[in-house]
Length: 353
Image 1: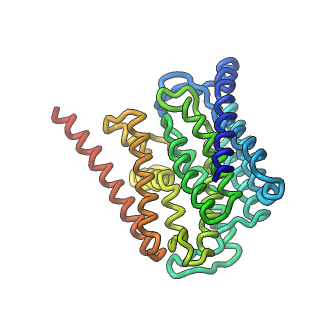
Image 2: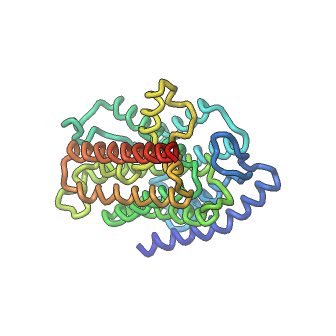
Image 3: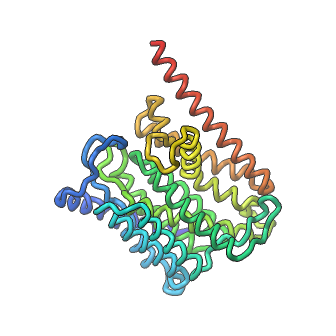
């Protein structure tokens, strides 16, 4: 664990020193994110903070992971570099969503076909384990794209994306360390350190945003960690004290907030007969803000909710995959309905006033 802490501190220091440079350069080159109709911030804010996160992560990774272990994750690093450059390009000069998607698919294919990080079955869901190879490839690429973009979608509030990803990375980092997968544990802590330094400048009132540069990299990283977790956990001996019986449900709990948010906005938009890709203010953080909460309060509420889900994963550790997944779905639906009811009551109270 000492190596992990050293890696996190290294990434933190490098990211912390890089963020002010990014901010200064952005203002000098007039590269700030301008407030708009769907944007919450009220002032021009630099949106290249993801560069600092990535620099801190990469530097710490090369310093604290040996050459042999680096070779074993080289395709993961190449894929992260790919989405990093896509994000930088989009933050500097916006590109078509279709082109970004193609880039993400190529990065996902690199990880799946060259590194063989893939979903190798359904892990007991609906009593299905083995699946055809083509379906394995398809489901894995789809999962990576969904998680990557789901994380990108929650990057709409000061401190939110950084806080949620930090919780997920800490959970993955600790678990990988406990089961002896030190390489993945270390890269989790490397990314965590870079994000924590960025959060100092991203907390309300935010001085910088991570932009697509950071959101895509972190989203891809979390998708890879999730798939790797599912495979490693599924093959662990049931006698291992750190084994979770429901692999898929546990991984979902570790990255739950972006997943819930994406499912929720798709359902809401379809119920209004709108395209699921129509941008609006129906995200979870927008809903909580409508309750009168500040940016900080909203971020903390979602952070506590995320921790509760990880606690739920611990409670369900010895439960079968199907029952655990059903519990997760029912719990998520209940929280979503509660949020909607609170908004309705808030709105009714204002109308009566």
